[in-house]
Amino acid sequence: MEKASSSFLRNRYWVLRHGKSIPNERGLIVSSMENGSLAEFQLAPEGVNQARLAGELFQKELKENNIPLENVRICYSPFSRTTHTAKVVASILNLPFEGPQCKVMEHLRERFFGPSFELMSHDKYAEIWALDEQDPFVQPEGGESVVDCCF
Image (tube, rainbow, N blue to C red):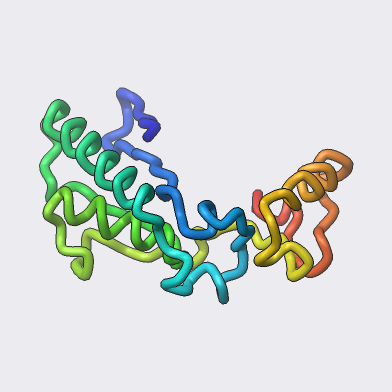
């Protein structure tokens, strides 16, 4: 988790990446909303443990900084791996996941690499990164470019 704050801002933000997912274990690229939101692509058992530990560390950070739980908001993407991570963290903090403090952010999501990479081996990432390095404006066929994700 990384923390960003400034003395003149009241809000603090913590960013948490999802735990190890089932696609991570299987070595699969899952970047489409269609596949990413499937329950079969949520966290692997190791990822649940990672999310639990992150929740415990976050809880400790909140206590050390005297931040009341009612001030906490958890925002997450609709991908099942991030939803699962957010649920685990919310449960550690004893926040109701279906309540107003936890919110899915529809536009917060994975970069879509296109159908030629979807559900393929992680080994294909090398091809994506090579395309990105050549020109960040180039979209993989049917997918999003680096620049598409910046705006």
